Image (cartoon, rainbow, N blue to C red; front, side):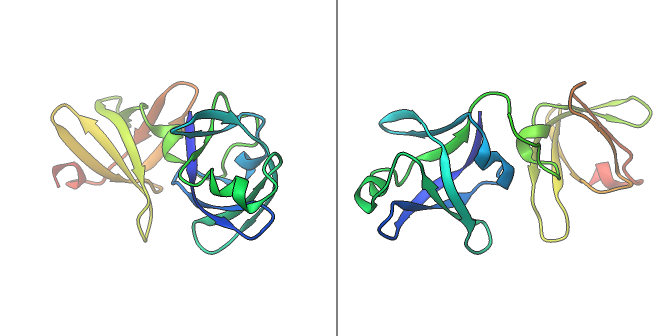
Length: 166
């Protein structure tokens, strides 16, 4: 299950809702046939009739089954999730849900740990790798990030000297 974001506000009279996108969000996911709203009342299958970006990290969505402001208001606080294997084009750049749980190894094959997260930063994303009792923060950039094998469950890095001692 991939959490795409949280519905934070009903917008307008036609039932539009503002979505605060998560780090796992990518626009193509809005066309998926596996979208659900998850909240206190349970799970509801949904489809997106229209969408538009509204500022950095926020989107305005119109759901096919909710056509007025009152209906939209009842959905505020729900998470929009993609449940199951994505049936749409994958994201162009790595998202946290894709790398969490991958084994992280050095170019020489030495295991470093398991990827726990991919954190967006102003300059570039950082991989959080848990190795034993320690977390390593590794820039997710070339030439450090050498290979990502999503199907094989492995990520290969070539850190510069001293990076893993920080």
